[in-house]
Amino acid sequence: MLRPRPLAAAVLAAALLSCASSPPQPPPIASSRVENEQPFFNWGAHPFEIEKRLSAEPFEIVAVEAAGGGVTGANRATLKFADGESMEVKWKTFPPELDHWNNSPRKEIAAYRIQKWFLTPEQYVVPTSVVRCIAIDQVRKWKADVQPTVADTDCILVVLTVWLRHVTAPKDAYDAERFRSDAAYAVHLANLNVLTHLIDHRDGRQGNLLFADESGPPRVYAADNGISFEPWVWNYFVTNWNELRVPAVPTQAIERLQRVSKREFEELRVLVELELDEAKIYRPAAKPHAPIDADEGVRRRGSVLQLGLTDSEITGTRERLDELLKAVARDEVPAF
Image (cartoon, rainbow, N blue to C red):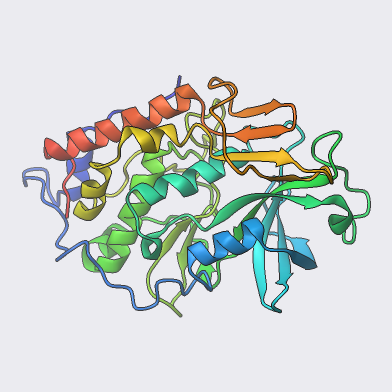
């Protein structure tokens, strides 16, 4: 099982030292409690509103185009809802096997869920993502040859993710000088790095981490989180974010993570549960069941489809959280 290297005091201290003889000190930032006057500038709406609309409300697909240079077949789609409002989303179809090392919907949902342990909606670093099964007839209006994702159903399983606006894709998200001088940047980047460390994010290629541009407040986002939770293959040729790259972490985030309970970990076992209706379309189950098989991330039994983290992936997440909290308690990782 692959794990990030243990948090080492020497490595983290080196990021804070201006010379080898100086003792490690946190960056000169007044506080990690940065107010954001436009918290959803890049989202267009509150994350909870987006969750509700994408997961349950009917919509019409009015436009679809390729989304950037990714290799997993993502599209940029415009959805129009019954009230006339439109929303742009990243539309990523499930792989035929429902889970793949380079396209793992369940891990995308897990990343979105875990950030809720320690971030408020105003601080989210993972854009809202939901799983939905779209009626095949609706999808064929823009792609005639598409087939149902699962045999004997009449729908396409997709992950819908709100399309972030006013963002750029830097070659490297970490700027040590800006971290020391820009409090808002430092807080949001450190929050992102705490999340990427917890989920063992191992795909730091350009475009997976996004920066807000100069038209809005400083923000950073993890836009693609499928290669995570101890993947057996990952992107070896880029600087990844599974380890802490920032020299200090927000006190507020650590205080919240100290309160994470067994219940939050248990909820990772069943992140999504869908059940076929009479029209052979998967709909959210009224009452999710216990994991059908805790050793598998994708589980099917009869009309039920479950997505979740495996026992092994949950154990790894818990160990990374425990390791981080102990490192902060020992002052190996400064908090600000």
